[in-house]
Amino acid sequence: MSITYRPMREADLRPAFDLQLRSFIDLDRRRGAHEVGPLPDPDIALLRFRRLLEADPGGAWVAERDGALAGVALALLRDGFWGLSLLVVDPPAQGGGAGRELLARAWEYGDAARGHVILSSSDPRAIRAYARLGMELHPAIAAKGRPQGIAEPDGVRTGGPDDLPLTESVDRAVRGAAHGGDVLAMLASGHELLVAPERGYALLRGGELRLLAAFEDEAARELLRAALARIAQRGEDANVQFITARQQWAAEVCVEARLELEADCGCVFTRGDVGPLAPYLPSGAYL
Image 1 (tube, helix red, strand yellow):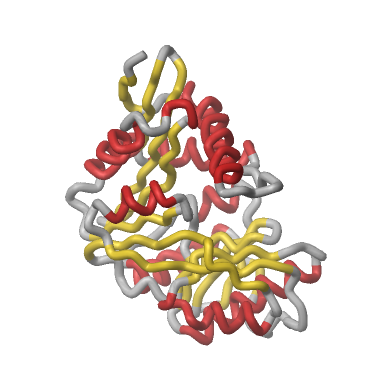
Image 2 (image 1 turned 180 degrees about the vertical axis):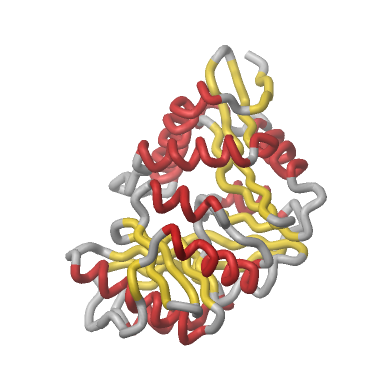
């Protein structure tokens, strides 16, 4: 059957999540993983999909084949900053051009953006597709494991919605655009906000650091130490992703906490004016 393309609708949200799940499992298996996971939480994923559909309908597209979803693309635009939140194609439909067509539509949504960012998996097909866009490639590592010997520094506290102005000012300094309501969506989905007053913030859920931004490296180090200390106190394993060469401070703290560094995290692609993007660990969902 031929593939057609249309804007995403509310009724597509759960099928889009199911498609994402199949795609992630297929990628893990193709990479030779003996165990699949960790899998996305459906409640968190649906909140993310709904947030992007409502805030960025022009960047939300699906591919359809024989009445079922064959692919999904979600892109966001914040203050002239464009980011690709998701691009997945159902395994049976891969190789037929659906990913290329969905990416073209998502990219068009940010055609006039001053800067573009994509976080790529380690899938060679994804890296090749984004490299073809003429973007600058920044290889990344991940840090994983149970944090050890790390203490929470003074001056970092639990935050909440009232700290949104701080997050926006920090975001504008490091990437030229505020996350705004994206932070509130993350809080609504169970993320924990850590705040270094007037210096920076971080968001984590369980053992995963989902976003960190600060005005300077020392504040970023303190926020990452605080996040890892809280993860250790809960007896969980940590997962810190997309550490590029710009984030040497993050690599140093992860080594200090005795985490294992892995070189198969993927890549950060940038184009145009995206600010210094440092000190900064991006959100996979909201860039």
